[in-house]
Amino acid sequence: MLVGGFEKVYEIGRIFRNEGLSTRHNPEFTTIEMYEAYSDYESMMNMTEEIITRCALAVNGKLTLDYQGVEISLGRPWRRETMHNLVKEATGIDFNEFGDDLTTAKEVALQKLDIGRDNQNRSSMEACPSVGHLLNEVFELAVEPQLLQPTFVLDYPLEVSPLAKPHRRHAGLTERFELFVCGREMANAFSELTDPLDQRERLEEQVRQHKKKNTGFVSEACGTEDKNRKVDDDAYEVTLDEDFLTALEYGMPPASGMGLGIDRLVMLLTNSASIRDVIAFPVLKSVQ
Picture 1 (tube, rainbow, N blue to C red):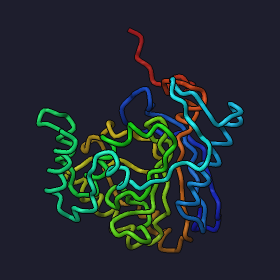
Picture 2: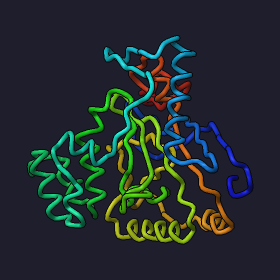
Picture 3: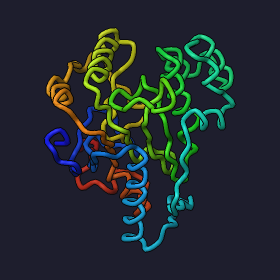
Picture 4: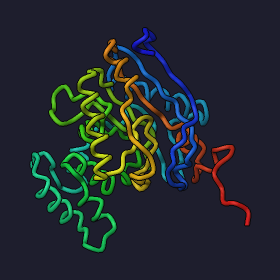
């Protein structure tokens, strides 16, 4: 639609992912997904703050909430910090020092996080095919659960952000953020990648990686996924979206996009412990 001349578009809809069930995730859930031409991921951070704070005021009349015994302050501005800095702050590991030395990065990460051979997280870290993947894995293990107050995590590695625009100042990173509240992801956004040649190369690499079965592919559109729900490589086929690539070849304006999980937002605003409490027809166990 952006290619066709609509400069601001949004859609509220149901999403289905063949993934696991938990108190934070239902295979079928609701999101709002939006795109705006001539904007970037900083614009989307401002819009995300605006949407959530207005919802909080409409529901509760205030920006300080109690969520399961934790006081959450939604007063703006929210913290904005890079993934690199958050990982360094939590673990003491500076991933900028490793360059492309994946072997050393894994050794340091396993030692700093004190992950022994019997730890179930060790295999996922050892399977990381790049320093960028490892950085993201360490973030999910050591940082994500600690992000209770609203925090925008910025500048994700290119390897885990196939649809995001390369960072304007830092090679190997993208202009992407995820919003975390109460240790869970609420929103995922980025400056859109509009270069059709770069986009094709990235998607072709994903297909190659999928076929090698090095790692499961998880779509990053509208982020409400949790790291513990990995997808079986053999369960589905990954192919290039030629229509999408053709549209980019016609010409897409600079833009940013964001996906916000509505169910998780309702959980936060209504102090609901389980996502089943805010979904009309949640997945339940069958009657025995």
